[in-house]
Length: 431
Ligand SMILES: *Cc1c(COP(=O)(O)O)cnc(C)c1O
Image: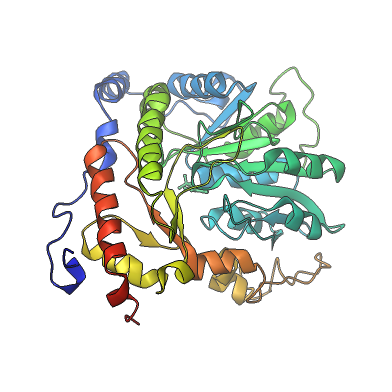
């Protein structure tokens, strides 16, 4: 038995992981240089006219996303957070409304609701995929509910078909936060295209990136137009902008959420690489899943029938009863071996002070205790028991399943798990 690095033995991995910047290559370089030479760093104008919808790179990037996802519209933004905010505003969410969201995600998945002066209502997630549980969503619907934001978390689609049925039945908008799951699919249909609007992120950490950036895809003409207006100051409602009627535009509050031509130059090359990059993720994840089969205390990511996973993270469940010690002991031992792993994911969003104190804007209590809101916000401990248990006790995440990592990184990870499993007795005495 090899001594654990935690107890002074040799580490499994002694070098840092490569960064995934290497996904940026010649194509991106050339596109950026061509853009610099053209000297048009943004093609947007806030005034009516052709440039209202951005410059040539922005258009090309949007074409690329529309083609890839097979939607009628793609609207680019300077981040997925701005795209989410615009999506929430575009479907008409406002003061007094509730939007059902999952607690397990990056904070913007819920905070975008507060940005529209509405109240996020958290529904619990399921054990298997860590995504919204449709049964829990149904329990949270009230006369004030206006929309559902579902997050396709870690690369796996949520139960989108069930959620679509619920949203249709109750006439709610369904927004997919698909920031982590481009290319994931359910019955051959891309995650992000089943709800009314799907949001992708192009920030540095995501499967493809432009540094910062986001895209919303939709088949709904009205939502697309509203998002284009919200993205670009909304002033253009003063003038006749297109030949179409623009219904319900009187309350457009516009922001500046526009993407630059430089980011778009990178993004239009990146979308071309998405399938190749996903293939790397899937190959590594499949071999890691296979290699983890012998270890009963560690459950690899679940892939539901007829679904494909895009493995933003390789998120496992650690079972403390099987292991005989706490998840955090396991993580400490693994980290000491030099392999990439972290406990939990983001904290359940309602544990953030903004929700706990119900103070968002100034000290008026809006939107939580706003005169237009007739509900009673609930962010108490125990609100979403599955999310809390997974966060506190079970989830462990590694991000090794991505370019430019390969078989070596998978092998080291498994070797570290094996060493830890071999030292069960000693570890079970750790606090
Ligand atoms: C990254 C991420 C976001 C935010 O993306 P930005 O582009 O950084 O604004 C939103 N939701 C989820 C689930 C994410 O992973």
